Image (cartoon, rainbow, N blue to C red):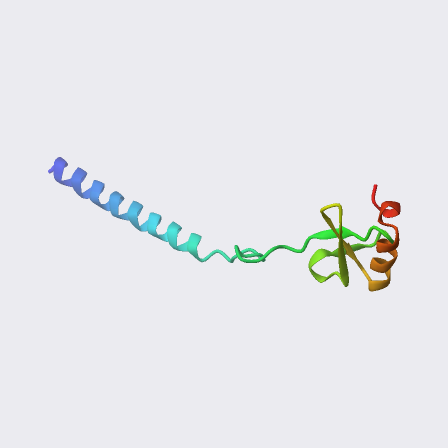
Amino acid sequence: MKNGILILLALVLGISTLAFSATEETSEKKKPESKTTAGQKASQKVKDPVCGMEIDAKTAEAKATYKGKTYHFCSLSEKEQFEKDPAKYVK
């Protein structure tokens, strides 16, 4: 009789453990995704080298490349100013 009760108890505990594990897996799958998914890049803040304004690289008005590095600008006039004398703005 004791063996039967122990087996029954082991089965009940085993089933409840399995049910608990399944619930954990399901709840993990339902977690909300982060704001950026694998295919998206998070916004990257960069500094306009002419005026010093912090801007989002993705939405910058203009950009230019100097010595292999890309610089982002808040306006087209800032880019034009930079292109006249880039060494003045690059440290």
